[in-house]
Image 1: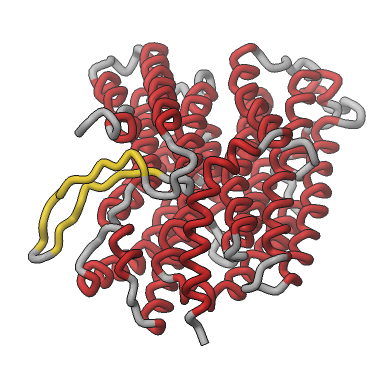
Image 2 (image 1 turned 45 degrees about the vertical axis):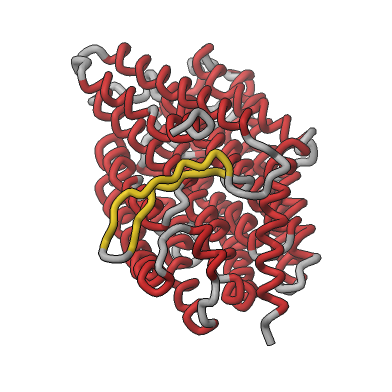
Length: 501
């Protein structure tokens, strides 16, 4: 491999070096293990910045390509094929950015079996990065399934009281959808003669009826991961029972594997089926937006409220993707990043108060603004970001998505109109949460002696706040990164739509 491709493969597998070092450390050396994991993830982030520096924003095609034959089965060659383009580069950066933040949040929250925790967490980063850079369907499937294992253990060992139930439910739901995707991958490899995604797109020629079957098979796996209504029921359990760092990475990155799957595979591989399915996908997305917001308002557990809000926010992402135009798809990609930042920050915030009070019941709080002013200010910013206040990141993504949905030729503008109500509903449940936690009198004696955030907790949140303001005030660099690749994808979809009766 030459130097041009070296940073991309190194980014994906560098966390394994941290795993190797931690394996040789004694379990009782907890701080050393934490520092090795943190420094490994920070170096990985640094390498990803080198990848970004080499990325050509004017090139719509795959870049930093690493491709070599991996193994052969009969007449079919499986390739070790990695690359990035405008559809994936931001998600690679989001993964390497959130991982060190998540690890830093565990400094005092995880005291038991720290060695195993950090090993699983770094292995999870490898799997997530592999999903976003794999350009061979077989390689993609390996990474996709691999992420299940460390996340299963993170929830099942370090989670809450119902952790095993949540972990098994998470595992079974995802596996069920993945089996259908595997069958579709096998069909493509056998009948198209290749597993590599660019070659499959270039080859085309899949009959319309078969396209729809394959679209549904892939969509089953991705819709569960998003999760789309009505396949969402594993999510609240997994979020509530997962440790804080697990919730951050689950919301911030793992859910994006589902939306990315639609973007990378369903839309370009099966464009005719995507056009036909767009109204139905938009309908499910719209139901998810309203349902997720309504159920969020009904929650008393603040972590469960944030979990259900993900169903609503990712409904916006799916609506944007299936608008099938540049505005909708670009807004959907940006909103993936926005959700990772805002909801990741919310889970960190919930974890910080849980460490102090060991409860997440909103009725157990009140008046925290007077006792923890720094915590209150940072929470207010993230709350306003999550509900889409202009000037913060959430507004830019949701506005662009609604713009694309209103102007789409493939879905009804009614979907955009109804979904816009989800923005108002988000303001209701987010401000309700903030009011219950921070406003009013301090009428619980247990809250009187709470300490405000320490320097480590502030350092954990500040990088997220920087990007919340950056995207909200100046999103142009982010749109510039994805624009050529988005335009190329839309061209494929438009050509397919033009050929439909």
